[in-house]
Structure formats: structure tokens, C-alpha cells
Image 1 (cartoon, helix red, strand yellow):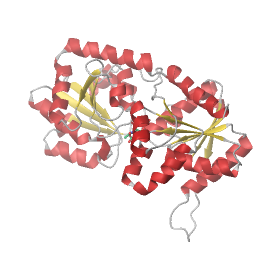
Image 2: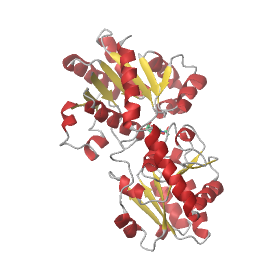
Image 3: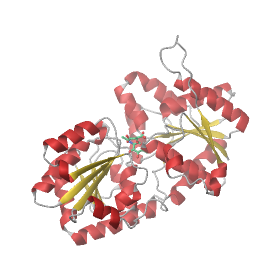
Image 4: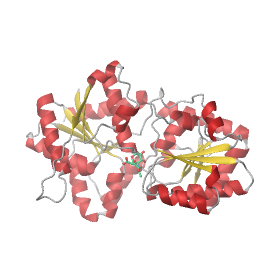
Length: 380
Ligand code: GMT
């Protein structure tokens, strides 16, 4: 098929999923056209230009000109126009929009301009749905964008339920979980890196996110303080960047644990950092799936997560790690301590994490579900 993909090309789960999906579809023989305002992060960071499948991947930049009379950039309209151009000249079969608002909205406008000769598949990642909680006036637009798409998918059963129950959306939604590339996310020998970051043979905790308030990174830092207070020697590696990073750094200083905490910022190569770590912490207040937890599991790192959203669909409590009540910092510390102090338990959960991730969430297992969704759209 000839497929257009639109996503936010930044350091966020939805952009990662869209990019990895595009790469995988190209490997499976499809032609893939990314229609985005910048080159998707993982296309440059992990994309291997020498691979033959790169031949099937095309990038079309959405350019936004500024005009003095209009105060704000016209992103959604520039995107719809670019979608029309690419669909027309590249003869796209369908457009896959990642996010109902604003990407499916632009895609539907493009479809109307092309007089219906384009199928629209929309994937909900959660941010688009929670946005409506903050901006209730977007609700009609969100419902329209979902209900008018030919096929809609969501990244978890939780998000599917939430969209239907909470917002009364009347549409069949297909839940397709996030996936990992096991050539990239697998246990690798990271002993050198471990020696560098934990020269005193400290245990290593890790967190990866974009440091938004919803990630509750401060909970993880407070739990780390409780862990250190038991006398355990440990380091906490925090990867990523975002609005709360400054506050989190200040908190680590305030709690007197700065020397044991390392903020690494955005990192393109994650598998070594994950592979050298003992426990992955994800205490989010909202998480429709939790791709970063899945990536950690694939590298053999047990996860201690909150009980929110789609996280229990990824992390199996008592098997691949532990689940604690969102906001319960003591429980977060207690369960993490169990993994740090019981080597047999850690090994069991590490193996189970790899087995769960590779047994259920590989690109080979999941991408065909997207192909089915595309076929369903084409048959409509
Ligand atoms: O979590 C973020 O801040 C990024 C966000 C996004 O919209 O890119 O991630 C969402 O989509 C990911 C891929 O489907 C999911 O794994 C994340 O759980 C989801 N984030 C939230 O629901 C907060």
C-alpha cells in the first residue's frame, strides 16, 4: 500500500510509535510517506540509512509561513494542504493520523477536498483525549474527528474504554498495543557504562520521560530518598527533558541526594542505559500505555509502575515488576527495595519482563494488526 503517516515528530511516545510503524511497514514492502513538520526523531536517531527499506520511506515537510496579519501559525491548515498535495501526487491509498486532534481533523479536511478519495485511519494515543479534559470546547471536534475516520485504533483497552465511556464516542475502536523493535530493545552488554555511572557497584534505578507534570517524576525522586535512607547504595538515572526537569533537579538537591542522582537529558541510544539498570520507575498520574516501560522490560528491567491507565496492560503485577497505587511514594519505595535486595526475585522478574515483552509486543506481532486496520479501511 501507499501510506501517508502524520505524527508529532518529537521525543514522545506517539511520534516513536508512528515512526517505528512507518519503518516496519516499509520493511514489509509498503511505501511510506511521513507528512510532518520536522524529520521524525527516530528516523534519524535509529533509522539506518544504509538499510534497503529506507528506499520506501519518503519525508514531506509541512511548511508554515508566517503572515503578519495572522497572529498564529496555521499548522492544521498547512498540514491539510500538504496532505492533499502528497495524496494527489503520490497517489496515497490512505492517511494514518496519530492523534484525533489535530491530525485526524486535518486529514478529514484533506479527504473532503479530494472528494472522499482517501481513507483515514486514526490512532488515539491518549494525549489527544486528555486534552479534551483540559479544553472541553474541543469535545465536538474530537468526537467528529474520531467518528468520521474510516478506522480508529487506540493504544490500549483502557484508552478505548475511556474514549467510548467518558466521551460517548460512537465508533468501533480497535485496541492495538504499542510495540518494540527487539533488534534495538534487548539486553546488551553495558558493563562499561555501569562502571562509569555506578563506580561503587551501586544499584541503579532508571526513569525515562518527557518530564511533564503527568509523569510525576517527583514521586520517583522522593521514593529514591526513602530507598537511600535504608542504607542501600544506589544511583538514580533520569533520562529525558521537559518542563518539570528543573523542579526535579531542585528537589534532588533539597533532599540531599544530588550526588546519587544523574540527569542525562535526551538520549537517542537507550538500550545500554536500560540494560545496565536494575529497576525502571514509572509513577505516572496518567498513561494510556507506557511505551518506555515496555522498552525497559524488553531490555530485562523489572518495572515498578503506578496503577493508572494502560500500565497494568503492560506491567504484570508480581510477575514483570510491581504495581502500586498512583501517588503512594512509600509503596513505590517498598516494592523497589524488594527488587534491589532479593537477587532471586530480581532475576525471575527480569526474565519474565523479557518474556512478556518479546512474547506479546514485538513489531512482528503487532504491525500486522495495523495492516488489517488499513485493509478494513480500504474495503469501506
Ligand atoms: O507520554 C507522553 O508524554 C507522550 C505521549 C504522546 O502523546 O506522544 O505518549 C502517549 O502515547 C504513547 C504511545 O502510544 C503512550 O505509550 C503513552 O502512554 C501516552 N502518554 C500518555 O497517555 C500520558
